Length: 597
Image (cartoon, rainbow, N blue to C red):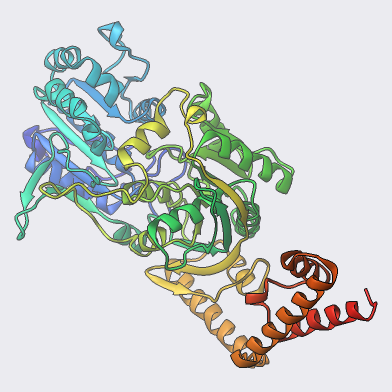
């Protein structure tokens, strides 16, 4: 039996907390070392909550840490103490409403996730309802009346969404201003815009910028030390890209090279095109990694985060061809999306493909491998996407995420442990050619068909090739660039699936040292001779004289003669040809004069 969490004086209620019966790692499996008890951070946060007894409390905890358990334990305690008699849970998506209702049922709280605004009241058998932010914002007066009708606790899940639109923020304030208690939760308490988040306190820093202030924070770094979340290994892939612009110009670039933002964006987009070779190669590498992980974690699953419906379906087709198994595909316009997620979470199939991301807060604990196949690059979106893979069920599980090797993502991967606050009083940030995260999240999560109807700008991906670039872990970079299937790549794809964070770091350094040693012992290729520019000019002049003579003799235009020589001898145009190529063309042309073809 678990010890009582709070003494008789807690929150002034005189009531003891009940024995927690909700598994610490919802929905099915507790993290290593936490079975049958609350995690240390949850107990500490609850102690602070009931000691201070505030009307508003903001808890910031990294994805996978157990925010649901914390909030429902607090709700159960408040109910038992008679401080509240009604609960409203507000979430970003319909799927999360059902997930919260299931979790609440585990601690004996009946929540109706099917409540509609048109219903007016929920059934007598329920303690409260689960609704979406959009649902509240559309009828704030209705929800205000419900809030006033009882002693209401409002749980605001992923509260940063309350600022998605000005009307939303106003509606949330109107609806829940009369609440007895408001408990706000988030794993990513920052936005790229300056829209204030309702019921969040802001305090000025030394620069006069107002920043969000949490009442309790539990970051990824702390959770990693406590073995609450998995260490994340980022596998970065580069490669050669070629595309045609809207102006008809063909452009080629290396993915991740130091080029302009526009070139980077177009190379990135070319890499993600399902018709090229980059995506199939990276999917194959990720599937190899998944097979390695499944040696020790048999039910480990993988997720591809796609940009739109068309790409998602194409990636799913490639995965079926690769594995022989049809992946689960999650699209925003699919009425069965929630049930498909639940089915995938419960079974042992290998792959799931979703448009951009399933949703923040959606728990599929067995996800261990990810492919970030979207061009979205905001810190909020990236953090939420990575959050799908970090939930640890037992000590030693690792997460591996495959990324395009572009500066935006490399920077975000290296700053995974950096804690951010939502800042006001600053200029709007540009989105570097991409949509802001607010639009991305709304579009990714809304329950209507959208992606298939989007128009794409005039752009044609022509060719993409993948190559292994490097591994990023804990702010460090490991490995040397190599071809697909090279020793450099296989060293890291074959890392065991069960390792502590310290063991991951040690093994990565070991693999790095082995690669350096191999490179030192390999024979180095001879340096290419420096071309003699004077000799090249003499050869070009000699070729030009011979072409001119042949043109005069046969009446064939100079350009046609040069084209025929290139066709027969190979090589680039004269200006780019080397000495051997020019000499070969001269010999071939001289042969024509004596009747050789």
